[in-house]
Length: 98
Image 1 (cartoon, one colour):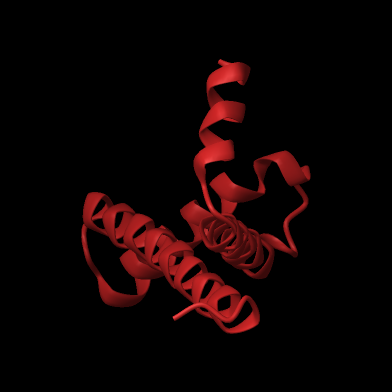
Image 2 (image 1 turned 180 degrees about the vertical axis):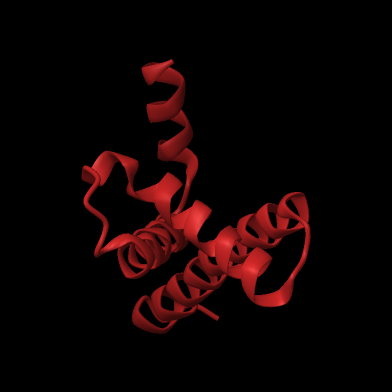
């Protein structure tokens, strides 16, 4: 598995790598913002952030629990997509690509 992952990264260009870094930074930032005050270990923060966001949707908007979790997952995916897009845009500007 490690060999496949390493070979796969060799075929990615620099813009894609920076985009992946942007997605990870966006995910970590969202998790940190949502779960910073938690008394749990950091390894449990992503689940705590997802649950907290779903609770906010369920309690604040009055949607069912399943719909609240779907909305929370959509928010996480959107933040990662935006981070990836911003990372790719910055990489193109820095590396002088079109």
